Image (cartoon, rainbow, N blue to C red):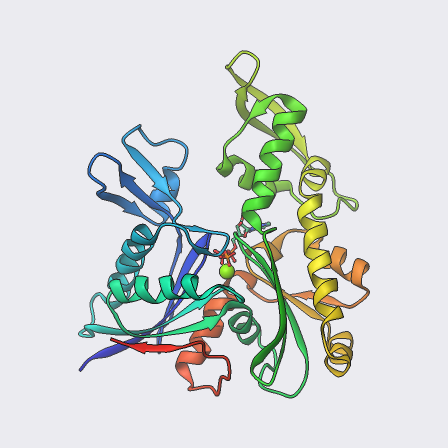
Length: 336
Ligand SMILES: Nc1ncnc2c1ncn2[C@@H]1O[C@H](COP(=O)(O)OP(=O)(O)OP(=O)(O)O)[C@@H](O)[C@H]1O
Ligand SMILES: [Mg+2]
C-alpha cells in the first residue's frame, strides 16, 4: 500500500499542508466559491478568496470554518478533499495518513467533525493535534522537557494561550479575539466614525497595512473607499493607525486578560520558567505591530514573536510527521 503522510493546519483563515519529506507544499486561504444554483464548487483557496464581496449573485464565497471550528461540514470536507488530492498529485501514493490541528478545548462534536471531514476527503488514518502544542513545537520550544513554555497563537478565528510541559498542555484558554474579530471591529468603527461601509477584505488590508496594537511613534494613514451610508454612493476616507488601534483595543484587552488568567492557573514552578524564558507569539495575528510590546508591558514578562509565526502550526505538525515524537496529548486516532 502506498501511503503518504500529510499534515494539515486547518485554520479559520488559512489552510497549510505539509507532506512528510517534502515540507510545506501548500498555503491557501480557507475559502470555497460555491454556485448556489446547483451547489457546485467553482473555486477553492486563493481564487475563491478573490471572489469575496464581488461575486455575481449566483456564486457565494464561503468560509467554512468559524472561530476555529467547522461551521459548514460539507464545504470543509470538499475543500480538504481538493487540498489532499493536490498534495498527492503526481505521486503514486494513493492513500493518505493525516494529522490535522484543532483548537484546544473543542467539544467532542467539533473534533468528531474534523475526523469525518478528513475521512470524507480520503484520509485513511487520522490523528488530531491541539493547535497550541503544534505551534509550540513549530516555534522550536522545548515542549517535551520538564519546563514550562507559554505560547500565544493568534489566528483568524481564535487567540489561544497555552502553557506546555512534558509534551502536554497544562492549562489553556481560548478567546474569540483573533483576526476576524479585529476586522469586524474595524468595519464597525469606520461605519460609526465615517458613515462608511467597507467589506471584510478592505478591513483586513487596513489592519495589515497600517494597523498596530499600540500607536507608539508611528501614526500612518491610508485612503480607503467604501459606500457612504447616507447617500449610498462610493466615498473615500482616510484612516490612521490610531483609528485601527482604537477599533481593535477591545480584542487586545481580551487577549491580555486571557494571558493573565492562564498564568493564574499555572503551577508556580512552571510560571517561574515562563518568567525566565518569556512567552512566544505565533499565528498570522502575531504579526500585528506592537502586540509583543503591549503584552510584555501589561504582563511584565518578555514576549517574542516566533520566526515565520504563520507557519508555526504546520511546521509543528511536520515535525511530528517527520519524527515519531512521543506526544502525550493525542486526542484519538481513527482508522477507516
Ligand atoms: N501583518 C499582519 N498584521 C495583523 N494581522 C495579520 C497580519 N498578517 C496576517 N494577519 C492575520 O492573521 C490571520 C490569519 O492567521 P492564521 O493563518 O494563523 O489563522 P488560522 O490558523 O487560519 O486561524 P485559526 O487558528 O484561528 O483557526 C488573519 O486574520 C490575518 O488577517
Ligand atoms: Mg491557526
